[in-house]
Image (cartoon, rainbow, N blue to C red; front, side):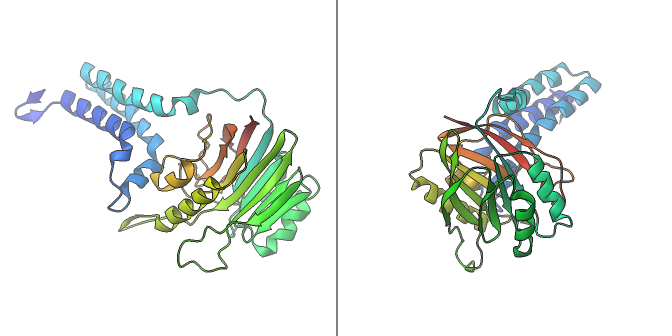
Length: 311
């Protein structure tokens, strides 16, 4: 597979296929010590699958049988990791629906966004970046269909079912001011039984010259994970903008305690061309059977709708 002292096309194809498969299957081995490169890779991990058809097309153009065979390895790795999300069918029945949306505090049409959320007919509507000025507006739009509400800081929950035991949850990273209030907990009395619901908004991340800046988000996720570990509720949902995907190891202290949806990619950010789902509906003691992304509103995020089975 070497021609004139240089690797042949076959060698490049085989190396590329094995490299992509390795990144997929062994992504946790990519170190996070420098620039949190591991977390950055895991944020966009499903997109490594795009390399498979690209390699296949090049192999066809070069008439490389070895290249086509090399595509099978990353293809199998991708299907093993994400095939369930891609091929799973929608649940025939479910007990609860919840729509999650970061409405964006610079939204030019908050009323339209509130109406779009009401139109989903979801049992629960969870929002982040809810400004003080917008609270009456969202209440006017959602109040009739969702008469029960809980708001703390910039997060809110509107429910068609009664709420109780509403309380703030402190997930502030070290050095963040007391005015930073981005999490609440409430107990929802759903027809199938009670369920604890956390509505959260973790700190933002940035990609810059020094890498993937996610330290504050990771610290907040660890605080929330510890809080959930101590929660005695048999059934629990975490709904919110986590500013990270479920594959991102930085969210591990939180996501390791919860179950991710079994169906649907539901990329939610950015709204104009979504490439990652950073808006999550995760459960414990319940099954989030499916999550789907909805049409864009005036926000830079798309809403996501989760369908939940109460076990």
